[in-house]
Image (cartoon, rainbow, N blue to C red):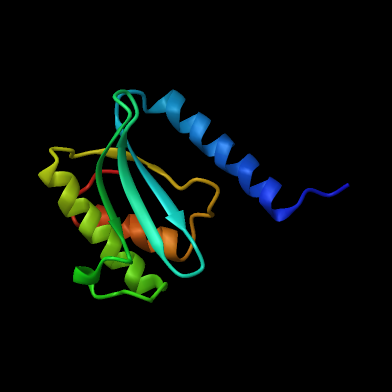
Length: 119
């Protein structure tokens, strides 16, 4: 029996996260969540179990409320890079979860890199 889209997503998410944990121990994790209407990202310290910074397309000051496109993802990526610098984080590893590195997820990562965050 074929796996459902949700089961494939969960398998991909666990595979990505477990590989990244082995390679990038001690660094902060930049975790992305993409829904049909919004995109959000968190900078997480897994050692202490705290969120250091976050950004979302729901924030009014970014000017992309109600939009979920590549431009909105780029603005969210730029915002998280600025907030990461304020939190004292220069480099993190990019946890795309089960999402493919394409389109909005890629635009977010590229914008964060351009703004100075090493991922």
